[in-house]
Length: 447
Image (cartoon, rainbow, N blue to C red):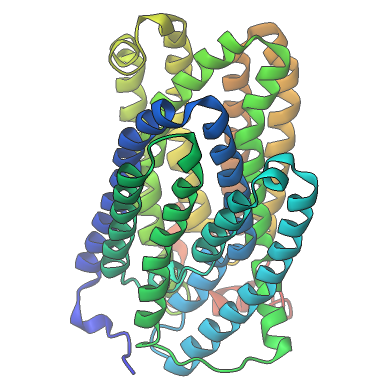
């Protein structure tokens, strides 16, 4: 069984390799839909495409339930145990057992959906294909390789999966009667990184039969992360629904076009934040000063890039609309310019969350802040959408994200754990820092 040997590869080289791997995967995530969506829209026609979209939504939410936030909680635990094969085996076994339990819940939900949702009741093949997608995506071992900072191979298998799925759809889907094949190939493609990823993970860890207590602990540790993912997904999709209930479909189209144009710039910060997250998490357990310094440097760079991107996008809004959306979407120009303010806020949010709150074990406070921000976003969206239209939705988003960033960073500063305070920290584990500042509170909750 292999062990993770950090001396073989320098930290800087590994971070660069992981970041490049994630960016390649993200680029493929942009490129393949550009090929697939126009083809399916013309081949399946609206009715069949609607069924596919419905099944994909069910698969996404079911997969998120099976993932249960392990991509953050378990990867952090793996990052802090890279040199302990026994601990890695315990983590891998308990997470897989927890996902098996959650899979039972997903099957029960599928039975309910199959009975009450008309699309699934009339065409069960869509439901079965959606379950296949959820099972393959939900049991992925990507969180494990994120934790041990080995993303190159899993990225290769993800690209292979996307390529096989795209090829299968283009070769076999020729009309609405073939719509179920879109889901089937998506599920079969997702099986490639899942199967090969698990096989590679077993080189670093062995499967064991975990105790129910250990599995329950794994679920409990991930509960906060699951709530964060659920809340973010909810209020990210709720804005379109709110705007649609108040304004016309044409206004929703202007907002959707602007959002799809700006969202890729916001998502550019995700891969580098994911790459740094396990590295900061690992340093927290050995050298908190170095962890804070790395978090501060990454925050300074990413937020600066976010500000630069925001200015460029704001100035280039007319050009973006003409190239990506067309002349019918000229009303999206002011929306894009306002959404440009969201780009540096997104960069700051990634840094404060994935390089601050979560590696430092402050997920409970992070959940509270995100929940408050989501509530503010929804309330403001209802109030402003009727007065400002799509611009009101963007204002609500900016206010909510500002609350998240300022609230979380303010809490870090209050606890003297903020990245800009790195020079005040000592070269000891975070647990020792907190034990000295808050004796008696460390056993269960460091803050």
